[in-house]
Length: 188
Image 1 (spheres, rainbow, N blue to C red):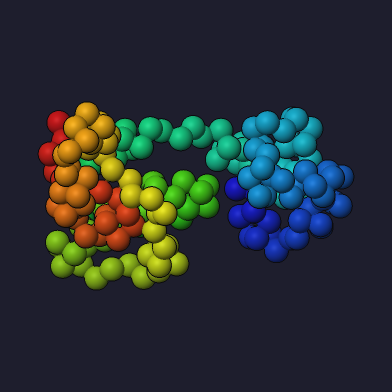
Image 2: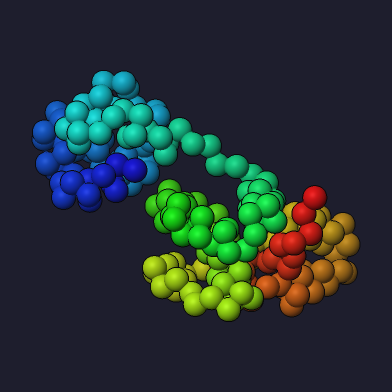
Protein backbone atom coordinates (compact mmCIF):
# COMPACT_ATOMS: atom_id res chain seq x y z
CA UNK A 1 0.00 0.00 0.00
CA UNK A 2 2.78 2.45 0.90
CA UNK A 3 4.49 1.95 -2.46
CA UNK A 4 1.21 2.62 -4.27
CA UNK A 5 0.53 5.80 -2.29
CA UNK A 6 4.08 7.05 -2.83
CA UNK A 7 3.68 6.46 -6.56
CA UNK A 8 0.32 8.28 -6.58
CA UNK A 9 1.83 11.22 -4.67
CA UNK A 10 4.91 11.18 -6.92
CA UNK A 11 7.09 11.01 -3.80
CA UNK A 12 10.39 9.16 -3.50
CA UNK A 13 11.37 7.01 -0.54
CA UNK A 14 13.99 9.59 0.37
CA UNK A 15 11.47 12.45 0.33
CA UNK A 16 9.03 10.43 2.43
CA UNK A 17 11.71 9.59 4.98
CA UNK A 18 12.98 13.16 5.17
CA UNK A 19 9.52 14.77 5.48
CA UNK A 20 8.22 12.22 8.00
CA UNK A 21 11.35 11.98 10.14
CA UNK A 22 11.35 8.21 9.76
CA UNK A 23 14.68 6.54 8.90
CA UNK A 24 15.10 5.83 5.19
CA UNK A 25 15.86 2.15 5.93
CA UNK A 26 12.52 1.78 7.72
CA UNK A 27 10.57 3.30 4.84
CA UNK A 28 12.52 1.16 2.37
CA UNK A 29 11.87 -2.05 4.32
CA UNK A 30 8.14 -1.32 4.45
CA UNK A 31 8.00 -0.74 0.69
CA UNK A 32 10.05 -3.90 -0.04
CA UNK A 33 7.81 -5.98 2.24
CA UNK A 34 10.53 -6.79 4.77
CA UNK A 35 8.50 -4.95 7.42
CA UNK A 36 4.73 -4.55 7.55
CA UNK A 37 2.96 -1.45 8.73
CA UNK A 38 0.99 -3.58 11.19
CA UNK A 39 4.30 -4.31 12.99
CA UNK A 40 5.36 -0.63 13.06
CA UNK A 41 4.75 1.65 16.00
CA UNK A 42 1.67 3.85 16.00
CA UNK A 43 4.02 6.83 15.83
CA UNK A 44 5.57 5.58 12.57
CA UNK A 45 2.17 4.94 11.01
CA UNK A 46 0.95 8.36 12.22
CA UNK A 47 3.97 10.18 10.76
CA UNK A 48 3.57 8.41 7.42
CA UNK A 49 -0.16 9.11 7.28
CA UNK A 50 0.44 12.81 7.97
CA UNK A 51 3.17 13.26 5.36
CA UNK A 52 1.13 11.30 2.77
CA UNK A 53 -2.16 12.97 3.72
CA UNK A 54 -4.05 9.68 4.13
CA UNK A 55 -5.76 8.18 7.16
CA UNK A 56 -3.90 5.67 9.31
CA UNK A 57 -6.65 3.17 8.47
CA UNK A 58 -6.10 3.59 4.74
CA UNK A 59 -2.37 3.21 5.18
CA UNK A 60 -2.65 -0.03 7.17
CA UNK A 61 -5.69 -1.68 5.59
CA UNK A 62 -3.67 -4.01 3.36
CA UNK A 63 -1.21 -5.05 6.06
CA UNK A 64 -4.06 -5.99 8.42
CA UNK A 65 -5.80 -8.20 5.87
CA UNK A 66 -5.04 -11.85 6.52
CA UNK A 67 -4.43 -14.16 3.60
CA UNK A 68 -7.06 -16.92 3.42
CA UNK A 69 -6.26 -20.54 2.72
CA UNK A 70 -6.00 -20.87 -1.06
CA UNK A 71 -8.55 -23.70 -1.22
CA UNK A 72 -11.02 -21.50 0.67
CA UNK A 73 -10.23 -18.60 -1.67
CA UNK A 74 -10.93 -20.79 -4.72
CA UNK A 75 -14.18 -22.08 -3.21
CA UNK A 76 -15.37 -18.57 -2.34
CA UNK A 77 -14.55 -17.38 -5.86
CA UNK A 78 -16.48 -20.26 -7.44
CA UNK A 79 -19.44 -19.55 -5.14
CA UNK A 80 -19.37 -15.90 -6.24
CA UNK A 81 -19.49 -16.98 -9.88
CA UNK A 82 -22.42 -19.27 -9.13
CA UNK A 83 -24.31 -16.63 -7.13
CA UNK A 84 -23.61 -13.65 -9.39
CA UNK A 85 -23.52 -15.27 -12.80
CA UNK A 86 -20.64 -15.12 -15.27
CA UNK A 87 -21.14 -11.61 -16.65
CA UNK A 88 -21.81 -9.91 -13.31
CA UNK A 89 -18.79 -11.66 -11.82
CA UNK A 90 -16.55 -10.39 -14.63
CA UNK A 91 -17.89 -6.85 -14.25
CA UNK A 92 -17.50 -6.95 -10.47
CA UNK A 93 -13.91 -8.21 -10.63
CA UNK A 94 -12.87 -5.66 -13.22
CA UNK A 95 -14.46 -2.84 -11.21
CA UNK A 96 -12.98 -3.93 -7.87
CA UNK A 97 -9.56 -4.51 -9.45
CA UNK A 98 -8.79 -7.18 -6.85
CA UNK A 99 -6.44 -8.73 -9.39
CA UNK A 100 -4.10 -5.73 -9.17
CA UNK A 101 -4.58 -5.44 -5.42
CA UNK A 102 -3.54 -9.04 -4.86
CA UNK A 103 -0.66 -8.63 -7.30
CA UNK A 104 0.66 -5.61 -5.39
CA UNK A 105 0.41 -7.58 -2.14
CA UNK A 106 2.43 -10.34 -3.84
CA UNK A 107 -0.48 -12.74 -3.43
CA UNK A 108 0.30 -14.11 -6.86
CA UNK A 109 -1.77 -17.30 -6.70
CA UNK A 110 -4.90 -15.30 -5.86
CA UNK A 111 -4.22 -12.71 -8.58
CA UNK A 112 -3.60 -15.44 -11.16
CA UNK A 113 -6.69 -17.38 -10.08
CA UNK A 114 -8.99 -14.36 -10.43
CA UNK A 115 -7.47 -13.41 -13.77
CA UNK A 116 -7.80 -16.98 -15.02
CA UNK A 117 -11.43 -17.02 -13.90
CA UNK A 118 -12.16 -13.72 -15.68
CA UNK A 119 -10.37 -14.91 -18.83
CA UNK A 120 -12.14 -18.29 -18.79
CA UNK A 121 -15.58 -16.77 -18.26
CA UNK A 122 -14.84 -14.21 -20.97
CA UNK A 123 -13.92 -16.97 -23.42
CA UNK A 124 -16.97 -19.14 -22.80
CA UNK A 125 -19.26 -16.09 -23.01
CA UNK A 126 -17.58 -14.71 -26.17
CA UNK A 127 -16.42 -11.52 -24.45
CA UNK A 128 -13.12 -9.92 -25.52
CA UNK A 129 -10.35 -10.10 -22.93
CA UNK A 130 -9.67 -7.04 -20.83
CA UNK A 131 -6.15 -5.96 -21.85
CA UNK A 132 -5.47 -4.19 -18.54
CA UNK A 133 -3.70 -7.26 -17.13
CA UNK A 134 -1.20 -8.08 -19.88
CA UNK A 135 1.67 -7.53 -17.43
CA UNK A 136 0.28 -10.38 -15.33
CA UNK A 137 -0.67 -12.63 -18.25
CA UNK A 138 2.98 -12.76 -19.30
CA UNK A 139 3.91 -14.51 -16.02
CA UNK A 140 2.99 -17.67 -14.14
CA UNK A 141 3.65 -19.46 -10.89
CA UNK A 142 7.01 -21.19 -10.74
CA UNK A 143 5.56 -24.45 -9.42
CA UNK A 144 2.29 -26.08 -10.40
CA UNK A 145 -0.45 -25.48 -7.84
CA UNK A 146 -2.60 -28.60 -7.47
CA UNK A 147 -5.85 -28.93 -5.52
CA UNK A 148 -5.32 -30.47 -2.08
CA UNK A 149 -7.29 -33.60 -2.96
CA UNK A 150 -4.94 -34.28 -5.89
CA UNK A 151 -1.89 -33.83 -3.66
CA UNK A 152 -3.33 -36.16 -1.02
CA UNK A 153 -4.20 -38.84 -3.56
CA UNK A 154 -0.70 -38.63 -5.08
CA UNK A 155 0.84 -38.98 -1.61
CA UNK A 156 -1.29 -42.01 -0.74
CA UNK A 157 -0.76 -43.78 -4.04
CA UNK A 158 2.72 -43.19 -5.44
CA UNK A 159 1.86 -45.15 -8.59
CA UNK A 160 -1.12 -42.92 -9.36
CA UNK A 161 -0.91 -40.65 -12.37
CA UNK A 162 -3.45 -38.27 -10.85
CA UNK A 163 -1.20 -35.23 -11.15
CA UNK A 164 -0.70 -35.79 -14.87
CA UNK A 165 -4.40 -36.50 -15.42
CA UNK A 166 -5.47 -33.43 -13.46
CA UNK A 167 -3.11 -31.23 -15.49
CA UNK A 168 -4.43 -32.74 -18.74
CA UNK A 169 -8.03 -32.02 -17.67
CA UNK A 170 -7.34 -28.52 -16.36
CA UNK A 171 -8.98 -25.44 -17.86
CA UNK A 172 -6.40 -23.79 -20.18
CA UNK A 173 -6.81 -20.31 -18.69
CA UNK A 174 -5.80 -21.67 -15.29
CA UNK A 175 -2.98 -23.84 -16.61
CA UNK A 176 -1.51 -20.77 -18.30
CA UNK A 177 -0.62 -19.63 -14.77
CA UNK A 178 0.36 -23.12 -13.56
CA UNK A 179 -2.85 -23.60 -11.56
CA UNK A 180 -4.69 -26.90 -11.91
CA UNK A 181 -8.43 -26.23 -12.02
CA UNK A 182 -10.87 -28.43 -13.87
CA UNK A 183 -14.25 -27.54 -12.43
CA UNK A 184 -15.58 -24.18 -11.29
CA UNK A 185 -19.31 -24.99 -11.42
CA UNK A 186 -19.57 -27.90 -8.96
CA UNK A 187 -19.81 -25.94 -5.72
CA UNK A 188 -22.29 -26.56 -2.93
